[in-house]
Image 1 (cartoon, chains in turn brown, blue):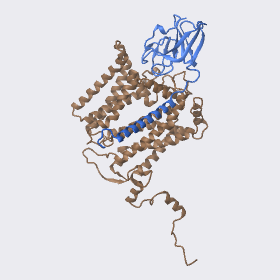
Image 2 (cartoon, helix red, strand yellow):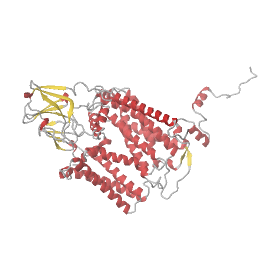
Image 3 (cartoon, rainbow over the protein chains, first blue to last red):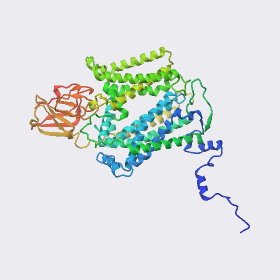
Image 4 (cartoon, each protein chain N blue to C red):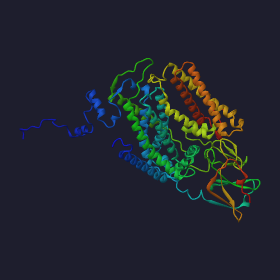
Length: 459
Length: 160
């Protein structure tokens, strides 16, 4: 027996062997090659390429917005699954579930707040992500279709928010969804059957709650998951655009994803998680009294991200406010990367120095112009009254739309006459419309009081 | 063989393609029918008997909560059943007795007692339900079908 002394450490200890069996390859990886292999060999890390462009890691280029969206989606999935266990989707029980979350269930408020605020933040961050990509021409070929998928997901995020809005079944929820779904009624031909299908009847009721619950917890999340997989896969295959200064060549330097990108992502996620939990611990999601189908509150407002559209409806005939103007806007937004021919400015913020000046100018012009329009329409402009011989479809639809389009075309031609490049002029128009929409949303949320009259907080 | 205009391969491609399209159409139809609205819940959507017509004085507006409509008796004695859903964006329109008008709290549309639009943004007068007065002199309102109108017209007003 003693002739055969067992050599020490011939096999690692059991615990070490278990630990090593989880991760393919040695950890930490000894060299760059090992680090690249680690990404290649990991199911999760494999959403990244094994090496990434070094300048593209610069935080002030992407601001981590896409990653933040993934983090928010993860928080929403986890808190959402928890909420499923305590929520009953029926008009009699839904509101009571909300009360139980506030009073009986441990951390009920915290989980609901996290879900609420993450969902709302996701709309904002989705729009910011879109703007970042637009203003750095991040949709340069071959990435056009990824832009389209991004917009589809933004619409799904809004749909997820909107269906979730109904679930507390309080006054806010009931009337915001009534107003929101009534917008669809104005779509010619298919509008009414579509609304009936969505509501499960002529008005918001028990069937609507069931439908929205199913959409909110299953169909829409699955849709987002399917598209985001494809979206990230395309980012990985097409690579992200590389930031550069004006007149600077595209830098080709690359670094390994592990640890350069992974460590940034980890810290970023942890900081945001801390911020969200802190915020949710102190700021409660709104909950009004239980839904009462007989009494609309005054004013009845749609969800905040629809307030720009509701504001449009105060100024335009419904077919224009709800369908034609948003439809034209969405179509243009989708086509942007396909219309853009000038791709030698990719990776430069706002394309050029002149582009930066124009963007600032157009934003200011959009804010002042649309606010002026709201003001005039409230106190002086009365197209249906001035043009009584035309139906309001023309006097309050085609006429103001044509006037606005003519003004935009005039602005575009003016910019071209001053020597702007096509992409700079288009960017200016986009900025002007963006600023107008933000202003309308702002007016709708903060400056509309009883009977939707224009009210200033200081008066 | 291969330069025939319509080969067996072409034929099979078309037949299988058509079969696939048909299958997709059938499944979509089944899915949509499955999800189509169920029958409405008892009360709203049924027929309401509101009793003898002379219980409602001329120039009165009586809300019928469960039927989601207002029974309007005009000054000349004519009756209307006005659906309370605003034609603009679907809010519940309350009647303001002080001014004798329906005023929508959501977007400020105003309607006369007859439901005609006084103030936009509502695109058309308030919808009506079928109203009749039976042989016993009782008012009967059928809420299963709403009547859309572009203009108020005397033909909708039911007199005793």
